Length: 262
Image (tube, rainbow, N blue to C red; front, side, top):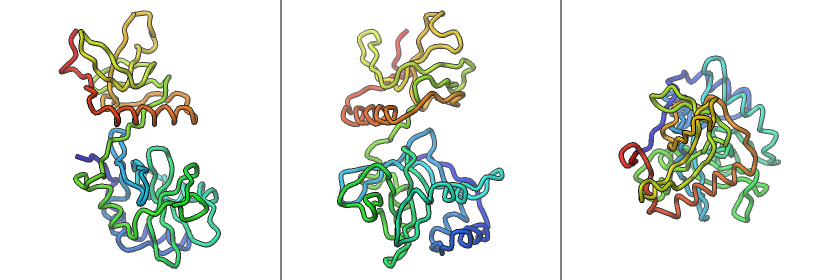
């Protein structure tokens, strides 16, 4: 079951200010969703898989941006910062969310109406609709949101994409007080003859290997990321490779407190 959090209710006037700011008319179904939820975020760092129509590619949605929260208006700030990077000479674009890679879910306003598209600055093929970057997802926000949050729909949850924290990150696990330094990701551990898969291995921080202790844990066990390690394009490739490995090996058995033998 998909787990997500919203950011509460807002008044439609908050969206009216955004419409004036960017000279757009937001569709009624999007306005209704925002008034009742003020955006949404997929919990636990997972994304829900959505197929790009007419391709074999999946994207993994993890956030729909909010309006003002603690003085920060994500919708306004993100659009002001990134709209110039989304090159398009004919149609109006407005960013409403992102996937686990930080690529954007956008409204594309054109003669065809207000369509929901995926805008990827890296992935280009002949099926894209604008400058090799925009990929059609749906004709309306209602159809799009049904695809995102209907976990029973075929293909909607092909897999749960895990947005692994970078190596060198310092994390705190659920119910724990010990900080761990992440040293490995996506590993199979032999535990008394049983092959168990774990998302991470880590050592106590700041002690390191002085105590000769190595902890194995999964992404869902992380309560808080205290420090995020260095990340670049190579890290993104590794994260995708681990997720592909998990998807292609359904026989993997995840390790946890119930099947680990001391």
